[in-house]
Length: 211
DNA sequence: CAGAGGATCGGCT
DNA sequence: GCCGATCCTCTGG
Image (cartoon, rainbow, N blue to C red; front, side):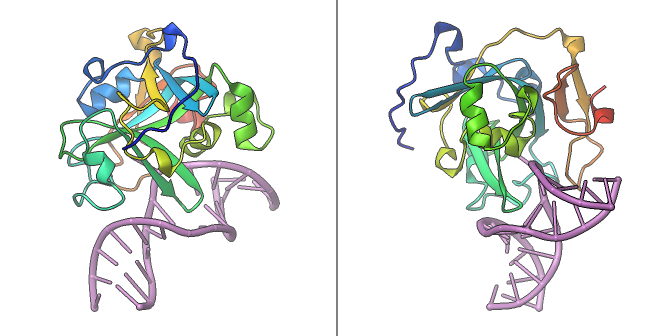
């Protein structure tokens, strides 16, 4: 996919993790991403945040969009790992996923929430409503609205595209990462494939799910 | 081609 | 906590 020129100057600490530095396996990436920094360059607006909540949708998962094979909507899930899969949900919100596994395998990690770091005023403006700092990108739909992530980024290669990538962050202690069942699904509800950073107010969902 | 059902959000009770 | 908005996608006939 052609990547429009980005005018953001990205500080050295926001240098992208290359494809080879990102786990290929779905559940492994979901856990790895907690504490990493999501970087969005929209024109000349730089926005970043610490990833605090993810969900894994692995190969063969009955709750995955890829469960019935490739379709027009989910084709980005079948790209090799580190591509964006973006779709519209409930006619109102977009969701951002990062593809996993080898090309031809349909699997991805849903990025559910970040704690804003840089560009919070831009994110707040994108949200178009008054919210507290920790609410700016809490929840998958809110995250996409805050970062101006939409269908134009579907299929983007995070290893190449100048508009969206993942950078390293302060690695949380392993006991600081919690696991739980996933939110808003109706199949394979028992799998504990949601990961979150304990104690972060930017984590979405019922408090009881994030002790 | 019709109909059901969403990996959500926000307002209201 | 419950419910409606909103519209696209997939499935089945």
